Length: 431
Image (cartoon, rainbow, N blue to C red; front, side):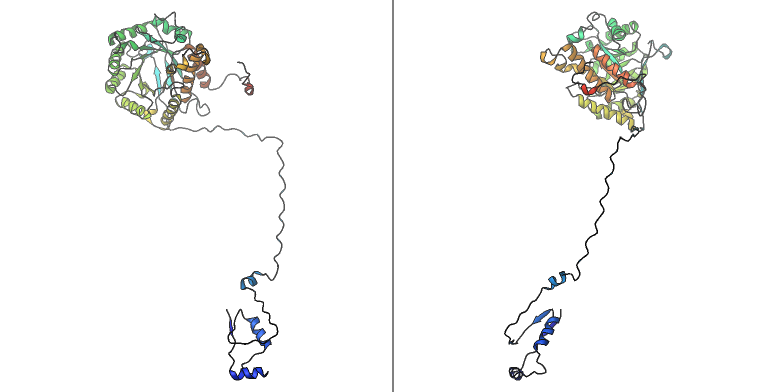
């Protein structure tokens, strides 16, 4: 900043100024205005200004700098883009399913053995072998469709079956072999399960293990189809039954259900391996328990191709969604490479009957004759879609529904085109 300081007048110079005489150090009005015009700051000290009227106009420096000397040019106008033409028809794009491959596959388990294989069964059943999630036909074909097993209760004890189930077997309740034949030949089941609930040690007249084995031996002689054997659920008695039953069905690849973590796994595995049987490993809705049980059984000598895993099934309204997500996790873990999960899955859809909605006589809920089997069928279908390979069921109608769905979903390609259904009219539709 430039500063101009006006000189101080002496007494002699003041006197001369009053007389109108200029001095060397004195300045006139014109000179003063010239100095003020050049200065950015003015400091006046010990001066006198004699004038009739004096006007100063001092603009702030910032304001002076803000005032442009030349007005800016107007901005150029931008061209408005032309509107795109609307398409007259949709673009055809080829849909490609998001197919992927997996690191491993599920083991294949054979149920039953023919005479060529050391058994006496007329046919065999195979489950498992998947290389992708359930029914992902756009990735891999389904090697074996899920199979359905209907329950037959022996030796002499019947559980309190709902009337809607008992009426389907009223003519064969006293003949277990005829009951089994009816399930397969008439109701279309793939195989049956003989439940040895009478071996439960808590019952007054519990069936001894040798007697239970004798019953199984009789059933094996009377029917030629593969079958399964269900235990009572006592860890000590079940092992005794397994040992005795294995003697009479050695080499038949019969399925024993089941072994749990609280049983002697080493002995159980030895019996299964030595007699060429299949085994269901039962856990209780705990994926870590499933992993532990399967791993221990395989470590003790049970081949992966003789093992089926049952994580437990909560029926519709009784935890079905938890069972569904658990089965999905198991299947995906197996496909990603976990050996303990590369095992076919069993789903006990019969647990649906634990819900009173399936059997209770309440008119507002609709007829029990339909409600019960639909309840069980919904449970079985959910398990199958999550990856179950073996469906254990009770009601013939529910079993038929699930089996038909499995047959359609497992086909590599439909042989004929389906008729288009106007699904938007589902409210008034009749099937």
